[in-house]
Length: 369
Image (cartoon, rainbow, N blue to C red; front, side, top):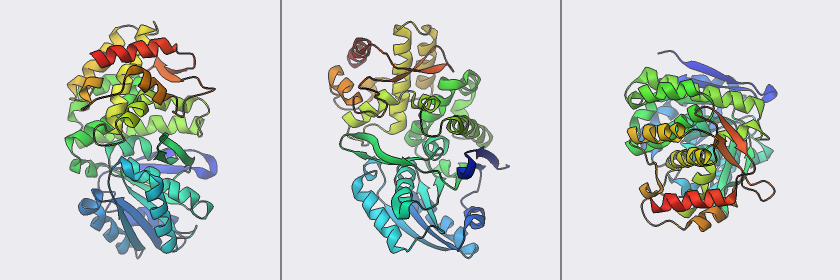
């Protein structure tokens, strides 16, 4: 299979996302042209390291690149001040300079954390994203959003820091658990829902094959990256259109905070539930037909995904408490909740004036369901 190349055109900060099979084994040759001296520092996690780190380090060695590696704990809890400090201090101990390269080798947590460490270390060093989860390949590795979580909320501390290169090896997705793969699919389907009805149509027919069919998987990853790249090019720092990428995320972030950023609810699962809620809210506000939320829910159910609040194990806070958690979200403007709603599948838009009572009623009904 050929490698697909999706450019992200941002002037002096432009880069390519390369998508295909076997890219971990080619990483040394892919990264070498960007190095001023042959030195990289890799940060990964303790899920990815036993499966893939040896191959990556061998790839660098084959090109005469000196590489060291740090392994951090897997999981959303690693996106914290504690591990930001640990990773940054380790990178400084490795004497990584601006002419060297940091490699974020993992899912969205490692990409966000190490991208942020790269942004603040020496006021900015270059880094490469080698995303190992479906979620990271289609979403978090592209666009330069980096950051950590705090007790006040998710991703409230961070920076825009574009990578130098993104290598999305679709073979590595074969080692994901079914749950992790489906969580990543929550971000894939989001792209069809927010701006490409034809892609959603394709997913309704083909998505059940993504875990086994390499060609379909590569197409889905490429299409999602193309859509994100286009939006990022037009709105790099989320002044307008890029907010569409947050479809489902206002609900999702509140649910993640309510569940402690832990294993009870993975980010992509929260996105899927959030998308279903966003379409239901849109229908209740008379913005779209009943068919749209019904199709969304039917497709997520067909994929075996979490769709309802009842699918989250354990107790959840009440509707009022969930709305209060949304108040800490980055999408709050002048104290008003900003939702991404839809006029139909593929027709999302930013809504600044959503009636709080409508959100409360929706969540009360969802909690009772």
